[in-house]
Image (cartoon, rainbow, N blue to C red; front, side, top):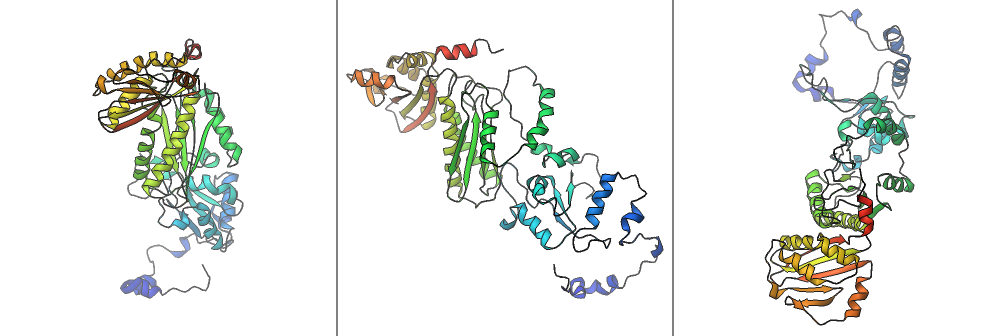
Length: 453
């Protein structure tokens, strides 16, 4: 950026150098050009219909940086430089994953302004707007092709550029509510701006967000998993209508790992399969469950296995917190089915047991009625041989070969009175294994759901 830097223009332009450098435009008189100069704003914009705010911003732009007051500008363009959405940063240089580095580059070069997308504006403008002007791009590829088209993809509005710093399609909406009843958006819209203004990176902000998304939850649900050079964090809500496909629950995870969207999607799919899709409170699937993971790309790039492991641990922690806080639940059931012909068969059988109202009622009454468990295993629609089945509560076998087994009744009774009840089922058919978390069915659950509307 030094003023003493010299360029070999002839070398750069090659054979066209002489024609380009000695060209004189004859079709347009020089006196008709509006040339830059210290009084450029006075000559060009003072008599226009631009409002005072625009004129003031233009003055800031033309009078900033090493070219300030000359009528010329030096602008650092940052277009897609830090593109990050629900996966990762795509910048070619890891040094510029962080928009702060780009802005520091502009300051070091004494640029007049930074031309940027809404994403960079939202991430860093509040720290630098007093140091360097920002020029914000609101459209996607606007005026970069001829003829211009009518269906430009808008990145956002001027108000959003000032208040939020991201485009409408970059705002991911999550909602739970009464099924079939329109969401009261007119009541919510006026509250968005104050929420945006209150954004913070303080420790208390995460707690406030986790509290804000609660409905019938009794406690906020958060998690943090450190995966070496990167971190995965998350929050969730949900206490009922919990069944396959995640159910009435919302979960948002974040990570600073640098990862491409396809790898991140695959990791999330595997994590959800072993966590949110392996719980059931009442066997009822919601219409609008959501799990999101957002990656900033500011840390290193972990291996796919390490990322999946950390994301799975975070999702599993949140899923267990949800089951523990289920509406009216007094017990958490850990239903493990082993010895199935496949993992998929084991999962299907375990879910059938966990979602059985009869088994749930037995759990609420602390009754180790293994016959109900075997009945559900036999009707799960998976391979089953009654002569090979065994069932245990808390590691104490109460059924072997499909019939009652002598056991320590006091030990089983003590286990059934606890908060967590382990039901272990061995089908004796193969190596398939799965665990599904469930709950008991209490009076509290009925009270919570008998007058919902």
